Image (tube, rainbow, N blue to C red; front, side):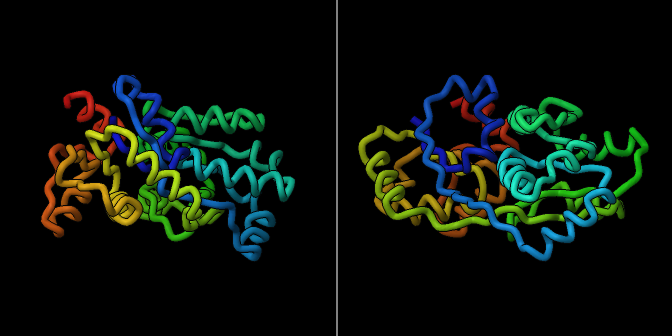
Length: 242
């Protein structure tokens, strides 16, 4: 069994991969978010929504909380009139529930695919990018590098996991035969150590999702048994080889 602690929404596309479907996971999300917007920023977005040609939904989490903002501020129709772009199928399916057609240039899509699509259709205009507070994502950075106007709009923030949920998680870890621990990003290593202090990582097979995870571990004298290349597809491939 594989211990996996990523947020359900941001990892939704991972579970659609055929290689991931073959494996048995104990999925205990240690990343927890809630809807949160700055009211002044929200008012500015509402007042200037027609100035945005594109809305890029980087993942299902961003889309889910952005939809909350849409509903609360009666902005569904205005959002529907923009070019909505997604990186994965779960996000596209979710937006379709609101009657918002979403374009996914490729399956699976990378930020560079989105960029190429935007340049190819030759449609000028600003981009709105819903995101989580204090989270850095690749897509806005790419747009800024090319001097393409983008506004990041925080629609949620990370919050502490409730003590009762954490207690249940610890119970699940204690009673399940965990053989592999999947550390999908740098913070997951810290989260797993903090949430499950009795889990001996040195006695488990560790899969690091990226070189950054491996470097974080090695600073504390731990080395991963397997190393992926930073994408969900590469993680699924590594797991398939174990």
